[in-house]
Length: 506
Image (cartoon, rainbow, N blue to C red; front, side, top):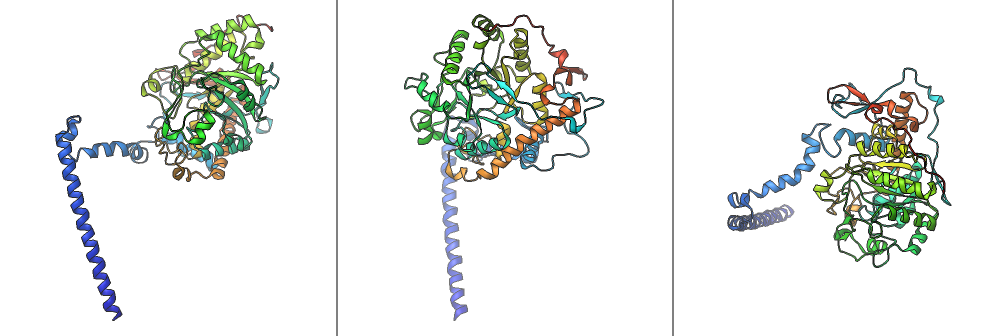
């Protein structure tokens, strides 16, 4: 009886599945038929008009291609913006696992523009080396900032990043002793959660410190800078991925919490002006820096992407007139290769100087005008590996910021979904289901490991070049491959200028 009953139910189950299969088959035929009819008679797409139904596979393959290329088809050094070799270096550094290779480098060392370092014949012994020494930023402020770590977290806003990502970065930054830049989206509780040092950025929309009409609200700024963790204030004039355009946060990512922090409507696109309403020239920039510095007592500077250094010379003239105390405490130079959550391709690929030109030009201008010691230089723009950072220090930077490097440390797989709220790793999405994949305490440890390992390996480069402190690297320690296959010293490509003028104390 039991066997008969089982057979009966098995027959029923098979028949049910058969009916469902036939039903799905009929539905599929109907869908294909309707799609064929619509494709054949629509007029806006010639591929679908000529190849109904199967033409849709083109878009499917285009969508999937960006995922499969990095695993199946591209070589280790082929992809952009970061190739597999770079990403794997970051992943291993973040996991604190073995980061050595065998047999030989896959990097083309004869490619024009490739930098490499000049080792010393008799490098100092390991025990003679010292940790990076603190650099003072803002010596004329009420609360100058002394900071040793030369590799820090670049500007990334809460909103562009998820809450778990910001929390993991904050906790990891505190473990590694590095700072974290808030980006232009305001100060969120998650920035403060880990206890790390904070650089508060004021974007063109002045999110978090704005009046209803978009001007600076001094009381809100004072409240933010009352947090002891907030060490500096950065005025964002522009960023490398979109020079001359303000930040853009799609409405799908503007939750109630983000709207409250930024002071904007919920669920609508958050588009910043392309420049500050109250900063239209060098004089007004200097006024804004002076006002914020006097108000908060914090070191104050600005971030910009450069196309021409003429206005920096004008700024130096203004410092000379006002006195050395009036100078920006720091300048963050962002190369045109910088990243972002959302930007027009035209601006991302075709406007602004890359860091390899902008950084030495800025440093040389400050040296020439006698302001190099007064104004600290911070740079950002695709510096994610130890030799990228060492190059920037050799070129004259005091500090190097990275955003995408730390995103990779968080687990970013370069799926290029940052602007769609569909980030599969939970880093750049406000979707709670996707955010669940990012485990804060695990990723915070990877953030700390990555920062420590970058600085450690920059130290190895410095050791090989015969200097004790990585900040002692200069242009004599690095060469760049020329178009003729022969390398040229950085100091020959970008010679140090003579000091022409020194601003006096007011």
